Image (cartoon, rainbow, N blue to C red; front, side, top):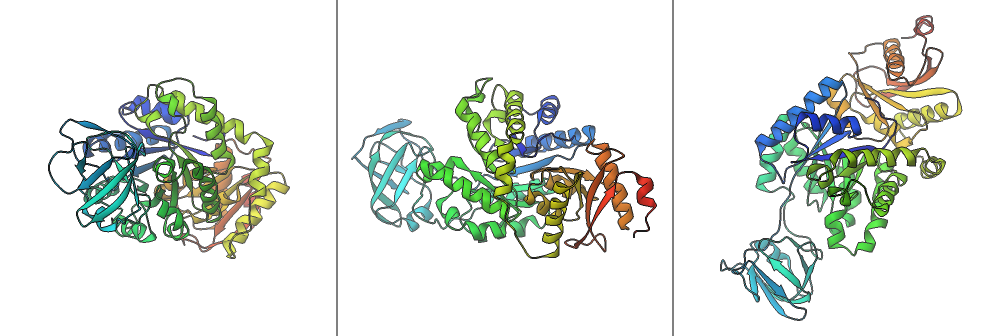
Length: 481
C-alpha cells in the first residue's frame, strides 16, 4: 500500500482500536506504524493485537511496523488516608519511606534511590508538574520540602525529578519481562523510556539481541544533555514531549524538538515527534487549529514520523485522527516551501562510498526525468541514507528480509518492497523496475535510479549506481552483471 506522502504516521492501539476491522481501517486511513503501549494491557492482549496487525499486513500485502513502547521505571507517591490532600504554597511537606498512609504533612515515596540522589535545592514535580516541591533538607530516607506550587495531591500520583540524574536503570524488572516477550513475538522496534545516558540504550540492546531495533525516548533533561551519545547508541529517537514539557520549562521544548530532529536526520536515523499532537480529537471529530499547526510544524521540520497516543488508543474518533494527520501531511508536502526547507537543511554528511552513491542518486533523480530511487538494502542502512537526502522523487526500498522492510517503514519516504534473493545486478535492476511499475511510480518508457552493493547479500556494501530503463527488453539488451 503506497502512500502519497513521505512522513509516516504512528498510531497507538488500545481499547478503541483492538479488533481486526478497526486496525485494518486505521492502516488504510494512513497508519504506517502501530504502537503497543506496554504500560497498558497484559501480555495476552498485546499478543492478540500483534497477531491482528500481522494478519492485516498479510491481507493487504503491505509491510507494517510494530513498535513496542516499554513503560520504564514509574516514580509515584504512596497513598493517603483521605485519598487526597490539598497542598498550599509555602507549606512544609515531607516525603519519606514510612509505610503509614499520607496526610497533609507527609506521604511515602517508595523509591530509596531518589533520596540517595537528592540535594537541598532540588525540585520535585508531582502529578505532571501541577505541584512543585523544593527540597529544604534530605537524608537517606526522607526529604523535607517546601510547597512552591500547590494543588491537590492524591494516591499514587507520578513524581518527576528534573534536577538530578537518578541512579535508576531505564529497564525495570517489568520492562525486562516485557522486552523478552515482545521480542519473541516479533516486534520491529523497542521504544525505551526514561533514557538518561547511552549506557541505558546499550543495556536494552544486549537484551534484544538483534531481534528489534532500539528507539530512545527523549523525555528527561539529562537525555537532552547527553543526546549526542544517546543518538549514536540508538537506532532511532522519539521526542516525547509529555514528560519533557513537565521537567523543562514548556518554552524550551519547541527549540529542543527542532534541534533533535535535525540531528537525527544528519545521523540518518528516524525520529518520531510525539505527545498531544491531536489531543482534542480524543473527544472531538475535529482538531483545533493549533493542533493542526503543531502537526504541520513537525513535518516542516523534517520528522520521519508523527504519533497519535490516546487519540487512536482510547479516543472516540481514531480513524478521523489518522485521516486528519494524513491530510495535513499531504497538504504540507505539496507546499513548495516544504521542499525548499528540506533542501536548504540538507548537509553533506559522511565520507563513505555509500554516502557518495546516495547523494549522487538523489542529484541524478532531481536533475533528470527519473521517476524513483530504488535501493537494495540488506540491513536497511542504504535506504536510511537515501531517506536522509529527502529526495523529490519517491524512494523504493527493496530487500529480501521482511524484518528489514518492517523496520524501514518507520523512515521518511520509504516504500518498502520484499523481493526474492538477488545474486546478480541485472536481476536487481529488473526487480527494481518491476516494483516501480507495480506501485505506479513509473511507466514502461520511464527511468529509475538503482543503487546496490556488489557482492550481493553483504550488509553495508553499497557501491554501484545505475540509471535504468523501465522497459525490461532494454535491460536484457545490455550485458551487465
